[in-house]
Length: 499
Image (cartoon, rainbow, N blue to C red):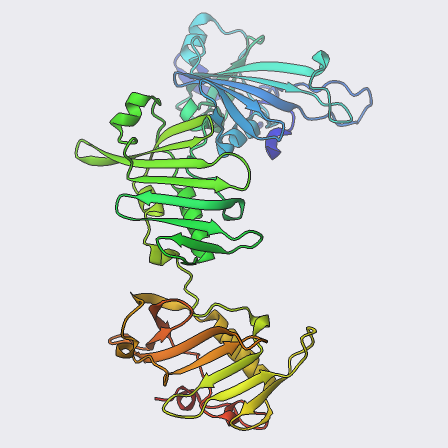
């Protein structure tokens, strides 16, 4: 964690002006002339050189006793923090960052009581502290080392008491120091944390699309399998249909899953799993990474007091975590396969296109263009080949190919219809055919009739086997050869679209 290397630790409270103290009858004003003592938890070792700034301590272990829990945290070699007791789990990054920032603050703390009695400690909540934090750190040498050098190691325990209701400050003291100080209320907010508050709630996340090779999801009424094409960012649906997958939708699926954080962590056992329905889950998903063990996530619902409660079991190798999650986690994975399909109408690579045939429809002769440039990767040189010959408008052709490549369906209709004609789609339909260097068809677009009660949408047939609904706005296909030839003006949209 970047905040692991913090500044010298001190109890935080601004100095100067009128400070507040507590007495047996409640809070009272302490003279502005009374010293605000700055006490540092981790005193830097002397550098031996006047004016040389001491190295900040590096925290390695922290123990927090608060709200009935004792939580042990350890800093990993990569700088991240984990909980090692009472459970082994990842730590909540934001909570640990706030804790370290508080320990690393360097403001002054007003002295409340120099030599408190037992009665004073009882009054301040320090006889039996409300919370205690023990921090272990080392002062690094010039090379950043010194973690194993005893003389560079420091351990300090800070005890927190009750809140001063007059100003919201909290009473604190340290082991080995009898004095009582007043620290600002944010100290308690950062340090008075139970195990749940310090534990990472990210139960379903840490799944990145580019790190996975396979996603398998089984739900009660539907399921799907997604495979990552090696060496690319592309995904394919392999079950229940074999289709291109929408890369953005796969990424958002995993991102949405991450948003459903754990609400609680029930004790895990075979009996608990059975009681919560995890032996026959609503959703059973497996995520296979490029390296390492697969991640299995099961989601189940139980009713308690008439309300649904959703529990998730995440397993990876020997590790298993059981948690309660928001109900929306079910819909994050239980999605219709149509949502996962690539919505691009045509599937082709722009650089493979060597010939384009536009079909104006209504019996008008097709318009054929050919890329006259060589296959050595040189600049394109499009020519109109028929029904007239001439040089094509380069940017007009490039623009048309770009639009065809980005054209997406707004929704899918009937799959593999027996009668395409009922959608106005046939050999005489308006459209375009894209061909490769060997004459092989790369992609074909047919535009059909208008979708009823959907202004601006038309039926279409593309690279997939189903009827698509597409927006024809901005799709201006040529109706004559002159529309593409140099020296001829670009057609008006209404004229180009045809009937």
